[in-house]
Length: 242
Image (cartoon, rainbow, N blue to C red; front, side):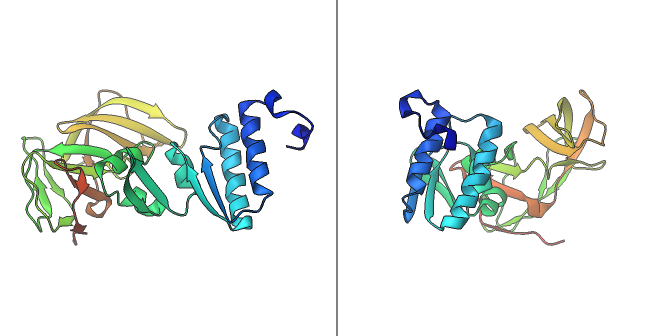
């Protein structure tokens, strides 16, 4: 930002003002930073570059940084630990990997990830220790799920699976019909209507899919989460073996 040194702050754009403010704070060498959406006025491409620059500065300066953002992609890319807040309440505190792979609530599951986690409401009840869920309907099969130490009454069981883990499989237990295909370069996002709600599946672009195509879906038990819809909390569980 050398070219901005002789200009008044009032004559700067919103993005330049944010960068100048960051520079002023950094040269003071504080022990801690509080940054409230410091990149909010930047365009997407420049924001990505600044994310990398800020992470590099943090690693060099070694100062504790509390970074506030509504952009979950920024948080996942930059943070050592993330506090996901909902109406002023911390829903989950953990590393990006913990937040992404083991969300503690349905809110976190639906907020983190692009696309977010699929949340399918099942009509079944769940007993403690149960690892199989038999779906109703002639065209449905049996889901293998994580082993939970807590039961859920019928109508409150929610299955959570990330789009990259919910994949078309010839003999999968979950039927659906593709309603949209979004090409993303190396991958494509399938929007699929199932008996238990809309689901998204991220697959390689080398596979051919079309709108109106019937598919069957499956997932590995260890990749799934189970939630109680009555309180939105994840169920305590162990990975099902076999």
